[in-house]
Length: 125
Length: 209
Image (cartoon, rainbow over all chains, first blue to last red; front, side, top):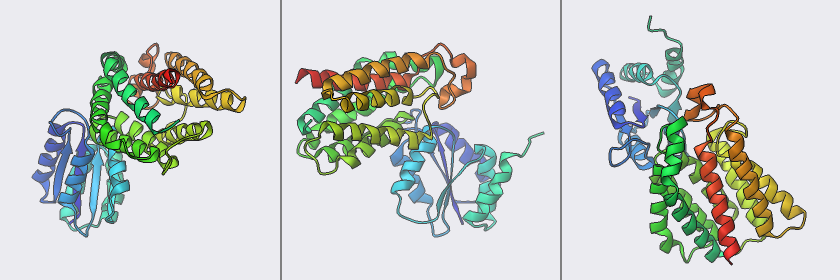
């Protein structure tokens, strides 16, 4: 199964999204939120550690909130030497649920990254 | 410009950022998420603590070390941005223990290109680039016109200060302030301001010598 990493400035937000996604599907998903001490921000070390945690040959999809979450993840990936890790641009909650469901359903990273495009235009009502 | 001076500049920047921490945070409170000063001060404090381990390294390794440290400790957007800037400057100073004026300018240019690349940003979006780009241009023009480094950098600092003033007159289209749209008008950009502080500090250290 494709691993999923949620990067957010807030540890609570990242963990909450992981919680909601797990209600739907049993995929390897983990939170990289906040700084080491739990305060708001994004941590290079934390993101790297969480990618390693969910990594398998199937790859890892990374979903981020904004700003430094995106830039710090970029820098982690520039230094990361294993293949099949991808940042996906989507609404964080909807994207995470979709990615978890599709990962648990056996989709590849490429397939998930195409499917997640839909979550960008899905309306709630 | 030798290794000793580079270390002195970095130590002085760390002090300056600590001293201006509250001011930068206040600017960021107005149009952003209110963490710029706190984050940068945390990053530069950890850089300061590492400085003694950089003492026997070449300029490229020192700048790269500073960048890496900022990326892992700042926690906000200025971490990857300034981190990339120092790392890119480090790349062009690889193995050097002394920089000519032209090499110093090339390092600054590489740093600015790093910020542009990382932030996918250009001038005029109310970011640190609005201080850095005019500063580099003035520095380069000064050096090309035969000025010494201190005078050329002094022009650069003036241009950066004008750039910070200019950020008050434009709407943010990058970074957190862009959420505020026209409400970002009238406020100076915290990132441009911290860039100005760094350039001012460089100039002060060079003048002391």
